[in-house]
Length: 269
Image (cartoon, rainbow, N blue to C red):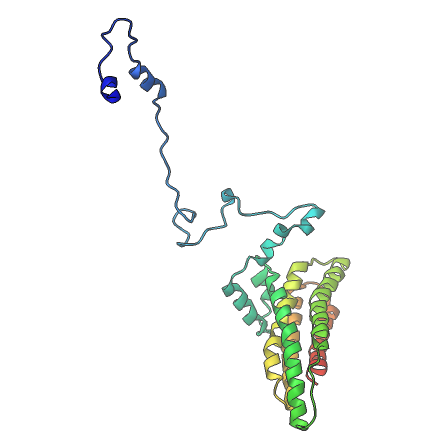
């Protein structure tokens, strides 16, 4: 009933107020901006692959620049650029560390040196040395005297962590300060990247050192140490091309060989 009364025309009645529908429409009507449909996930035009979001555009606000002051050392965003690698890049750099005569490792990492390899390879090597070192001592003991008792040596974990992390961090840091002192250009991140990937061959060698034949073990570790030492020395020499710093190149070779011999003597006796 109420709806039927409301629909009756009332503009002809005395004292009625004419409707201002046209004015309201004029006042409230406006041209709406053209709606833009957002696609998910966003991408840069049509260049990006479906399901992947491009991080290259600065307008998206994803790229973060490291802080210029001392507070940047305590900010996680300052180090994200050193972990911007994918599987293909890491595998390519791992295979490069097994070809020491190429001497072009710094040219490969020049645009994007990473710390991912340093952390991942060092951590893997620590657990490999601790676990396989104990397995090797067990196999050697059973090979020589099967009736002797054997116990797991937990100290291998502590020694491996101190040795690997200490070597991978301190040696590149020392070379960085030495080259800075001698007036040569040096990049600490690139040095950490070089020495970090140089340890990858010892991860592979850990499997072979399980063979309970002492002479074969020495041959394996010396070959691995020579390969790793040549990888560091040749790339360091190409990096310092034009500077007569042969002593530092020879020292890097000797330090890498010393690490290989220490791994054999301590973890695979």
